[in-house]
Image (cartoon, rainbow, N blue to C red):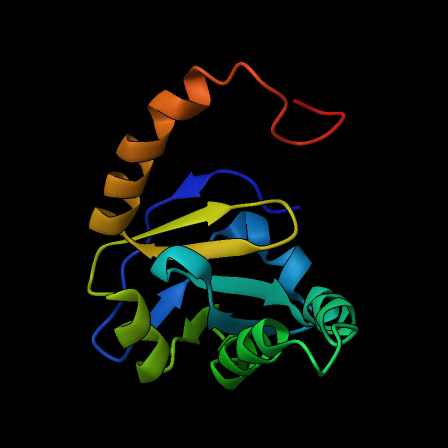
Amino acid sequence: MFLGTHAPKLDDKGRVILPAKFRQDLESGIVLTRGQERCIYVFSAVEFQKVHERIRQAPLTSAGARDFLRLFLSGASSESPDSQHRITIPTSLREYAGLERDLTVIGVGDRAEIWATDAWNDYYAAKEADFSSTTEEVIPGIF
């Protein structure tokens, strides 16, 4: 399970070392793709296959489902860590997420997300007050 907040750096070749805590979950391979809110989703290959199976169940007659599937999968890239545990983030994904040197990597349970640090800080500042003052059930049966 991916948990926590980490602050790795992007090197000049577009590579990042993902947190050591995440390595076991990513042994089966890594898939990067466009995330919502302009971050990059990081899935294990196994989890990505599960997500793909769920979204491919959407009817082809749904324009929204077709749009989502196209954008989600056309940005996907299968990556393998090198001997120093670095993965290369493709240029198109770095541009999509506005990634520069300072990154924030967060664990979101079944995936990790890579954010430009400034974008994460802005998102966090905008959403934290809402999170703290939640008075209704957001996730059925949980909170």
